[in-house]
Image: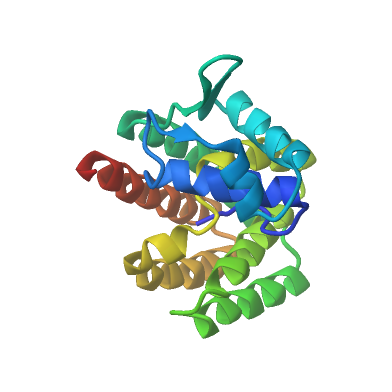
Length: 213
């Protein structure tokens, strides 16, 4: 499951953490956000928190109003399915191109990264390892335009997805190995199918979780 970059500034970390809470339903629609409380939580000043909230407003996740303050808009299960379908198409195309363009050295890097994800199964560090694996698959497509589209689309994915949905770990690890095998075999359509299904399965799990709240 592709994930956003987990590094960054205080603003980026605040935006990512709040986005994760909204996307997983921990902050449901209608929740009022307290600017001072968020500032205290992230041990920072108001400016980066305001910038983080503005970013979330651009994503359509919160509403910032002068009088009513900051309110979570949230996402519906249908929104999630639509967004993950789009992301699935993009990541599927990246995998297909990677199968055609990846170098032998790239395959070895992907095998090592897939092994690293598996080594961190059940740990918090699997989030970072998973992100590195998917980033390498996308890079192997050798398309800056596609990478830019994926970076935008992946914002609908909670960065802590595998931590929030640990039941997905086993299937994710199997998909990673199957994807690397398809890339090594230069099987573009199989690579596309694995990558797209990988994303859609995650989207369905997130949509179901939101539906049950």
